[in-house]
Image (cartoon, rainbow, N blue to C red; front, side, top):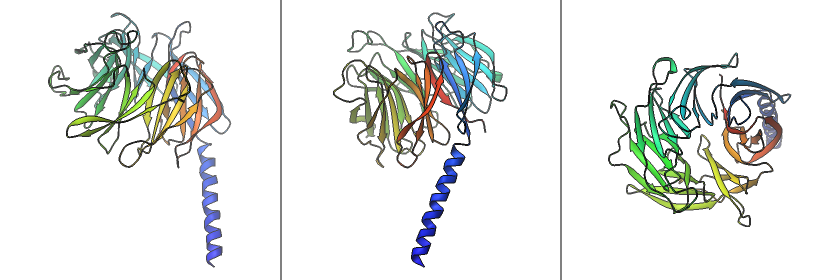
Length: 380
C-alpha cells in the first residue's frame, strides 16, 4: 500500500509539474524597452511575446524623445516616466507619457529639465508626488514635482555632489548614477561612480526642498570601484553594491550604525582581462537569488545565492555570446529574465529555474536597435 501510494504521489507531482510548465509557456509576456536613438528615431518599444508559439509583436511607441535610456512605469496611473539622456537644459530631460497598454500607444504629456547633464536613472515615490533623477555628467540629483495626471513641474531642487576618484578617465568629477528609496520612503540613496560614494539622504515630502543635505550618511567604496547600482536585502541590514569600474559585487553589513564591507566578488572569470563595466543588479522577491550584468570585454551574467544572513555564495558566471549586456529584469512570476544587449542590438530571453535560480537561454531574440533598458510589465 505504501509503495502504491508513493508511486501515486510521484506521478501526481510529475503531472502537476507538466501542467505548470504548459501553463507557463501558454502565457504572454510584455516588455517596455528604452534605447539610445542614434540614427534610429524610435527610442521606446512595447513588446508582446507569445511563449506558446514564440510569436513576437513589436510596437514602436515614441519617436520624439532622444535617448530614453531609463524608464519607470506607474502601473496604477498608467503613466510612463523616463529620462532623455542629453546635455543642456533643452536636451537633458525628465519625461512623462500616458501609456495605453491595450492599444499599445504612448502619448507625450510633457518634458522638463532634469537638473543636470545626461540623466541616466530615475525613481518615482509611491504616492507619485516626486520624480528623482540621477544626472551622470551633471554629478547631481534632481527633484521634480509630479502634478496632476502625470504632468511634470519645473525642477524644484538640485543636490550637487563634489569630489573625484582614483580613475583618471571616469572619476575626474562626480557622476551620479542611481537614485532609489529605502525603508518607508524616508531615505533617498544615491550612488556616485565618480567619487566612489553612496549617499543616504533624509526625505521630508512636506518641505519645499524635500531632500535634506544635512547629516548625510556617506559610505566610501574602495578607491576606483565606481559604484553604479545598489540594492538592499528586504529583511537583513545588508546592502549590495555593484561596482562598475572594478566589475565587482560588494556586500556591506550595517553594524552599530556603520556599513562594513564584508564580501567582494568579481563578476567575470579571473583569467579574463580587459575592460570591466558592470551594469545592473536584481534581487528576486524572496531574496534567495541575486543577479548582476557585466559588460566590457567580459560579457557575463553572474548569479549569487543569498544565504539566510544576507551574505552571498560565490557566483555562478554565465559567459555570454553577445555584447554589452546592460539592463535586465525578471517577469512577475520570476520564471523569465530578459537582457538588453546594447551593442548586439537585441533582447534575449532566459528561463529561470525557481528552485535554484539558474538561468537557461531560450531561442528567443528580439531585435531592437541599441537597447539599454528592458523591463517586464504586468498588465493584469
